[in-house]
Image (tube, rainbow, N blue to C red; front, side, top):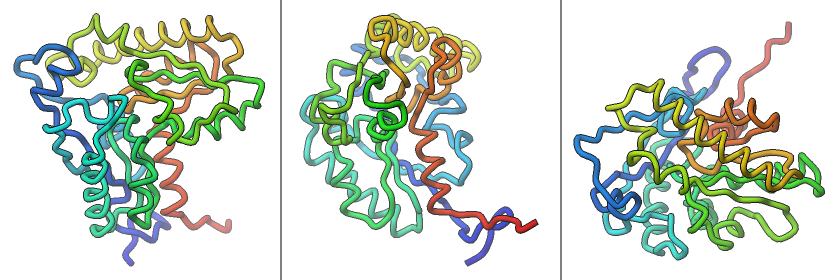
Length: 264
């Protein structure tokens, strides 16, 4: 194998991310309206922005036109899971070393995808919750800020490995999302500085509301792949450890693409 950078033994795309195409039906189902002249431009730090990662990234489009809600429903379609498996197998054939998805709710299909390939699959930051719970101790609670608490079902949580022995508290972004324009955080018509400011403002409010209601929270997990750019602001506001999917992917990449240490 050829090397890239110093001491790495693998050359190629390390991370493969299955990314939904945003359709008219998606906007109608999620926001009730379709923005005019919308063009995506995700903030640095989000999973959808390749500069967020320490390793090369490849994105593969997933057509969810037949499933406009995607996995953000109480009963995601089994057919959606089969499409994800197909994309994952394509990535594996192309030499990708780690697979992810662009919505934390795809954890619903975590086992199905992971069992279909021979490389690590990280569908969601929710996979970190059992580990985070161990890190902070069983007497503390893991706070979860999710895209929509109304459709984050017990089954989604169970498939992430979160059972009743793990203390959690969940707050949904839906209350804040309703006062913003659709997908504002990725709307290229708005300056990135403004988008980050709005996202930080919203998530800090959510985090404060959550920690005030549950003072035993010892750490926060950001479920949504668009939330990591605001992680710094959430940590500064709460003083708590903050975990997200970009952190998870970079961590797993360190395992699959090791770098030789310098002996001196």
